[in-house]
Image (tube, rainbow, N blue to C red; front, side):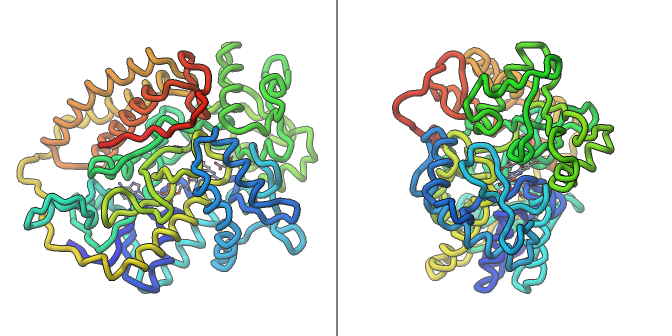
Length: 525
Ligand code: FAD
Ligand code: SIN
């Protein structure tokens, strides 16, 4: 067992922001599955939204966020995040993030749903620069211990105290050391889940391999409410390539003038769907692309920016340009084949403005949460921002309450007395593939009640099988992830069945209208 003051699950933007904000006050342990750079943060392309232009206002950013979110956002959260954005960017600049500049000011690019240019970026690889700066800062702090290769299994609560209390108080996590196969308890006065989204529940996703909703599933099992899980965001423009399956083509390509075309007729179709054309919010553009593909039996649509100056295109999107060249596509001369793919988990663990969950001692921040910022659809480049604002908010609350956060009691070690090594790993692969396929086909961009019920039926059957397997065999990362993927699939489908309307990212042919009142889908364990 290891004991620190605060345990953080996740080394992406949310986890490291919280760790850095806490480290002058207490000793922090940051746990990560696989490598420290394995989350979505490192993959972010477009940038971070903040009101920094003289012609822009907080009110504009708030309004754009609420419009994209289909009115389901909590206004106080939107105000809180938008108003804290400039300070978050300033801290990143201080940490050395080399944002692009236009003379002395930061260069601002544009993305769908934003009425102004307000996205700061580092070329087209913002996330990598942010991840590197946060890691460098965290590594340099003597109070932060970074421990990669730890797959957290479950939260430690009053049920795991040596003198059983059964309370919901959270004391840390049990984690599998991926190198040794041993499970250890890591305990502290407070725990922060910053474990990212659940994108890999879908067959096609822009998210990294580890985005299996572990934190959401752990929090749910421990007793936290989760909210709006039906609001899964699909990005309209993921590269279509049979070998490279999840390479994003940033929305900034459309922001800078890229247009979507039918690959056979060359027709620019977005104005037929929305007056904002290619710069409509993501749900609108993703549905239009899906519609074009299904209507004409296509494999992909075209995203074309070749009408702009080649030096501008290659200079503005250097990483995408280079990557596409290796695949034989010159984006300065020809269109890029693209398809929609799952991109962001808008729903998650319900938190308040201080990042507090329903359980004492447990906080959460970033993509694993539902803070009220995104509502029914996330506005582009608002998510890294949410990680910085809520990572900081959770840290501040922990410091402010330090005297009330009692030290952890003795905890029972992980019990492996009734399990053996698996001789049927095929079950994991089979179930993993099956979940991702039926979620894509039945719980995707356009839904129906019948398809959702089919998905629910399969989930019910698989849950029995996976729990049986989990009860008999020693845990592996694949098994931990499968159990969590299935749990998240269940939460998504239950939430989708619950919503009897179409709003934002939840579009169902059985209830195509939007109801007058926006109500969150809150599931209670
Ligand atoms: P992540 O960065 O995903 O980190 C999760 C961490 O949790 C990782 O360290 C992981 O190892 C750890 N973890 C997970 N499960 C476990 C477990 N069981 N045990 C231990 N550790 C665990 N947003 C923007 O605002 N702007 C953009 O331009 C942008 N571009 C994007 C491009 C792509 C391709 C993708 C996929 C997303 C993009 N997003 C963008 C979204 C944004 O990157 C994410 O929402 C954000 O980075 C999430 O940060 P996070 O800290 O919450 O989680
Ligand atoms: C992108 O660059 O298109 C992704 C931006 C985001 O997800 O916010």
